[in-house]
Image (cartoon, rainbow, N blue to C red):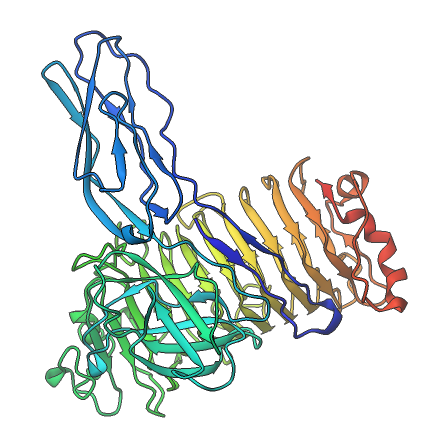
Length: 624
């Protein structure tokens, strides 16, 4: 679990909202329901999913389930952590770790024996992490990072991975003196950049090279902390030391035949060639491919007419073991690694893409794309996770399709980032100037099932579609979309809807603390019959319906929403002059008629506009 900290966006006058800070304590996983009774004489069965992380000072508790035949059983354990207690009678493993217990305890096996028969759970690990702290008021606030794991040696000056930390109140100077970064309580090896991020203009970026960090045991999630003039940040974001290599690529000085892995002075020439060679041909899970910004755009054509595809290999979850971890593609700190994909140059497919995970199971997963600038004309756009592109982390990129064709045989249908998969994370990107097939090219686009956090992005000047869209038609590996957490994004100057929850959007949809303005149609549109228990709160929608089309309101429903489809609370609604608050072919009479309490308008909202909002006060807390 984690502590989630939210911030005021601050950039858009009275319309921007302040999000609350909240702490969530760790709760260990409980064992599943007990199975059906086994027959006497049958061998024992054991089941359960133990929690694999516990904070210092929190109680760890796991008890496996065993099929009950009425006959006695006895439990045993291998490699119990020294801070735990184990019950041979119940199989329960409990304990409360202290600061001295921080680390990872691997190879734990719980077994049950009945007579001469024994059954065991798969071996598991427990990582003890430090207790996260809240940031002091006005102090530095860490929100997210690009990497969650990487090497602490090798690469430039033998200081390992480049790590970018994003947040607020980092100051404007003093890297390594008044501004410091610590991982696991140890200061990082060196500092590379302090300044604005590529995403929201009010979020800062601090880039470091992690260094040795006191050589902690690999595989432990270590807390990240930033201090400014001695004032410490929160510590809920973590970094894991995980084996990997640095592969440098230079499109001016590099030579594939003479490249030396880990040596910045002997870089590769190509990230990927059409035959899957170059740096990509040598990469393995845990490795980091670093593109130099040389002043010359990257225009190479890799596999299947993309700049590069995650085709024949995949990263994996980092565990601290060699050969695990995401495969990272990032720009070198302080340099502009610019990928320019054009149809004339041969990048007809797109720029960076996974592979169809339905057709190629297990391929193209566990990727990190960060600190790049991409302008792409190809069909799939700047970045595509494809189908089942699980565990893609897309952070702090500048993404555009500024010259993509809007008609003809090669017209693209895409977004700045598009695709689906479990564990997707799209944070702090600047998505802008997206064009292509009219009304079919969007800022960000979820096209299938999985789970995704999308936050702190700046989405603007979307010329051919919606700011953010969920739309599933059954052709991308799934028939519904679930579990999308969309928050703290700024969307403006959009040719269609700001947020479009369209066909087969279903469960686990949470939309909060976003600002949407200057959109031609609806601020938020519903076009799904499956939506259930969505939560939409603390958002600001203003200057919507700019094209004057009376078929649309700020809130628009074009299909049949059922009772309980969504809860709206504490949003600010302000459409363009003389335009409706609600609209669409499906209507919102159920929503309006179910009003429970009034809008909570900000006290500093301009007095002359409060009259305009009275008719939507009833929309503050309603269910549809």
